[in-house]
Amino acid sequence: MADMTLDDLSEKMGKIDFGMLSTRTEGGALASRPMSNNGEVAWRGDSFFFTYEAARTIADIERDPEVGLTFTGAVGLLGGPPLFIAVEGRAELIRDKARFAKHWNKDLERWFEQGIDTPDLVMIQVRARRIHYWNGSDEGEVPL
Image (cartoon, rainbow, N blue to C red; front, top):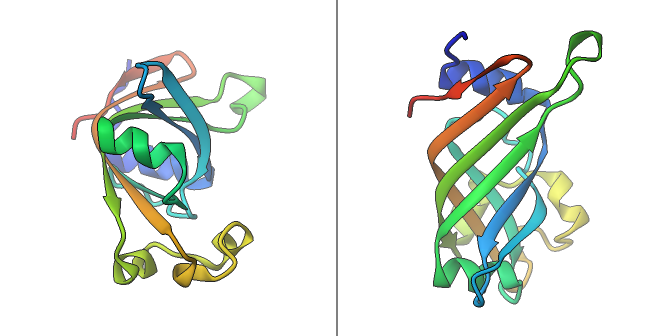
């Protein structure tokens, strides 16, 4: 089993835009939803997502900031299994437009037509604490 570094993982994630963000609901259930990583594919252990203040995601994170992320790459060579990534992390809610601008790209205007001036916009920053991957027959933890 080869050990993958954060740089290796970042390179392999270069074409993955969407992942699943999982939070804990008020009743303790897991809630997952697809989220775009905003084109930030040069991944360094932090992920950034945008949503609306009224989204259940925000209330879930305010109650319990421990979250999970999962990403799946394209099918591997010769139809082999894709890259799978599971991230455990801590979420922070950001409501600062200057910080939004650092992680914004024009494609997000599909969901947020007024850009960083969209009313009630919130950015979620997830800082990875643990990363596990499966890449074909290789699997392991990425040191952070």
